[in-house]
Length: 436
Image 1 (spheres, rainbow, N blue to C red):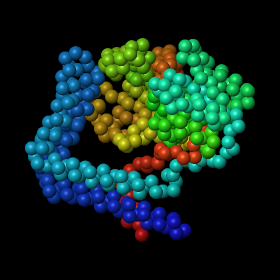
Image 2: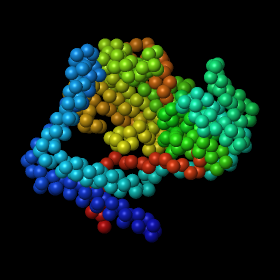
Image 3: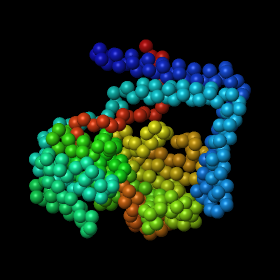
Image 4: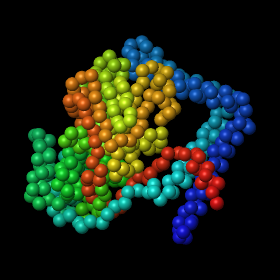
C-alpha cells in the first residue's frame, strides 16, 4: 500500500467515525433533553408532514371547493407543527439535532465517496479539431447566443457557424449531416437539450466528437457534463484546450435522447397548446383527470424482472438520476454506466401519497436500472416528453441504451464535474469506523 493510499484510508475511517459520533450525539441529545415530550414532538412532525402530503394530493386531484380546502390544509399543517414546536420549547433542540443529523449524513457520504471506484469519469486526450462546425439557435435561452457573443468567439477559435433563422423552419439534422459530408470533424450545438440530442445522434452515427454549448433554458445535459451553465462561452474552450469523454445515449426507435423520456401525467400536460402560455393553470386544470386515470391511457411499464401497472408517471433516464438526495435531485453521477434509469410513481389515494415520504421503500415508488424499458398502454399512441420535446408515439415504446456511443469534447477545466454520491449505508459506515 502506497503512502497516499494509506493516508486516504485513514481519512476515510476518521470521516466515518465522525459520522457515527455526530449521529449518536443527535440521538442521545434529543432523548436526554427532550424525553417523552421529544418523542411526542417527533410524532407531531411526522403526522404533520403526512397530512401535508395528503393535502397536496387532494389539491392536485380535485377541483373547486375541495381543492381550496386542501390547499389551506397543506399550508396550515406545517404552520401548526411549527407553532406546537415553539410552544413546547423544544424547537431549538429539534433544529439542532436535525443539523447534527445532516452533518452525520454528509460525513457518511464523504467517507463512502472516498472509495476509488466512486470517482468521476476519466477524460481522454485527443487532437484538437481542425474543422469544427457549430449550429447556434439565437432564440434559445432568451438570446444567449448574442448576449454572450458565442458566434464571434467560436469563429475566433476556428469554427464554422450555422446561425439558425428564427423566421423559417430549418432541418437541423440535414444541416449536421451535410457538415460531416463537407469534412467537419466536430459537431456542436448552442441551444436547448432537444436540439443537442438531435445533433448528438448524428455525431455518434458518424463517429465525430460532439460539443455542448449550454445556451438553452435548462441545459441538464451540460449540467451533468460539469459545464458552467452560467457562462456558455466557457464551453468553447474545448475547441482549443479540450479533452474527450465517452458517454451513453438513450434511444427510442431511431431517436436518441441525452437526458430522459417522460411518460404519463407530465407528458400529457406538455402536449397541451395552452401549456406554453400558462403552465400552472394548465397543469392544475389537467391533473385531476390524468392523475386519477379519468383521462389518458393507462400505462404498463416493463423492465427485465419488473412490471409496473397503471403508474401516473414514468421517467426513463439516460443513466439513473439520484433519488433521496434533496441537495442533488435531477443529477446523474455518471453518463457512462451503460444502463437506463427508471423511476415510476403510482399513487391512487391520499394515504399512498403520504407514504411516498418513505422514499424508495414506498410501494408507490419504483426505482431501478435496466438495459431496456418498454412502455405500453391501452391506446395505440401515447404522449412522450423526449428531452423536453413533446411527441406522440405508437405503442409499445421501447427504450434502450447505447453504451459509450457518443464522443463529447469538453473543456479541460470544468467547474461542476459531479461527484458520485453513493447510497448512505450506515452498516458500511460503521464497518469503516471500526476498522483498524
